Image 1 (cartoon, rainbow, N blue to C red):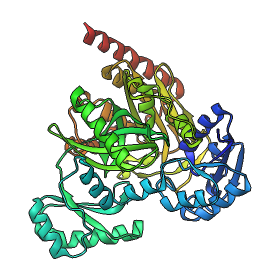
Image 2: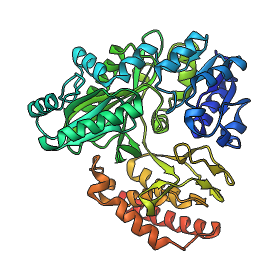
Image 3: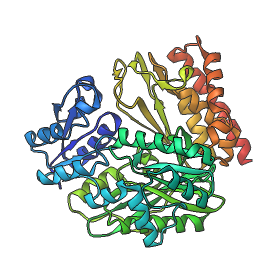
Image 4: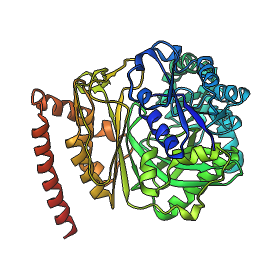
Length: 486
C-alpha cells in the first residue's frame, strides 16, 4: 500500500480523498495556493506546501511546482481529484518520470480519450454505439457544409480536446455553419491549445446517462451502474440521480456492457465514467471522463462501493475487491451541487465570506464540503460550497428527504443556488421522472428561481426559524408519503 499521497487539488474533493487515505493509514499532503491558505483541506492534511498565487494557472495548473512539492515531501502517489490536472496526460507522464504513482488511468487511455476524434474512431472499430457523425478534424467551412448536409441538420460542432461543456455549438442550418466553425475553433484553441473540431448529429433533447466503471491493472473491469445527469445549465450538471428512471433492466444491462467494452478497448484501469446520450430507447456513447466525477457519491450510496478507496488500492497494485455480480444497487440517491451563485444575476459566481454555515443531517444524508463558517470563497476557482447527497429506499422518499435537507441547509454571507434546487425538487416534471437535458429552459426553471428569490428576499431566517420550518416541512412530507403508500 502507498505510504504517502499528495492530492493535487483543493476543496471538498481534496478532503474526500484525504479521508480515504486516513482510513488506510496513508499520510496526506496538500498543495495550496495563497488564496487557499486558510482552507479546510489544508488544515486536514498531514503536510502542506504552498505552490503559488491564487490564479490556477500559477498554482494548481503548474505541473512543475506540484511535482517539486511531491519530491520534497517524498510523496509516493498523486491523486489529481477532478478538474485541474485530473485528465492531463502530460502531468501523468511527468509523475511517472519522477517515480511517482499517478492515481488514475494509464497515460495511453488518457491520450486516447482526450481526443474525441481518435476515441470515437476507436469505439466505432470496437462496435460501440456512437453518435452519427465523422471522425475527421474540420477546418474548412465548405467541407463542414458538405458533412452537415450528409448528416442532416441540426448538427453539433465540438472541440476534439474539449471538456466541461466548453467548445460545443449547435448549428441549425447552412447559413450559420461558417461563423460557428470559426467560433468553436478559436474557443478550442484558446481553451485547450488545440483547434481541432469535428461534426456529429445533434440529438435534440436527449437524456444524459453515464456509467461508472472501475478496473485494476490486471484487466479486471466492472461497472457500478448508471447515473442520470440530465438537469444541466449551459452543459453543466447541477442535479444527478441514480438509478435513471429512463432505463429498463434490459437497457441497463446492455449499456453497462457497452461501457465495459469502451473501457476494455481503451486498456483502462482505475475509475472512469462512460457517458451516453439516450433518446426514445436508443443510446449513443458520447465520451469517457478519465477521472473520478463530482457526482460519484451517489454511486457509492446505492452500491456500497467506496470508489476513492478502490482507486488507492488499484494504484497500490492490488486487484479489485469486487466482481460484477457483487454489485447489487439498493435504493435511490440524489446529488445537488450547492454553489455560491447569484440567481438574480444570471447565476454568476458569487464568492465571498460565509458568515453562517449549518449543514443538514439525519438518516440518508451525506455532505461533502470544503468550507466552514468564516471561510472566504476565493474568486479564482469553481464556486462549489458543498455537495448534498441523499439516499432513501426509493425515489419518492429520496425526493422528500432532499426537500427536507434543503430546508435545513443554512448559508449566510454569500448568494447560493439552494433556491434552484428547491424549485427543481417541487417541479412536477422532475417528480414524474420524465425529463431530459432541455428540462431547465423548457420549464423556465431559472425564471421561477428568480421569482422565488425575490419573494424570499429580506426574509432572512434565524436558525430557530429555519429549524421550525424544516420540522413543518418534514411533517408535510411524512403525511404525503403516508397518503401515497395508502
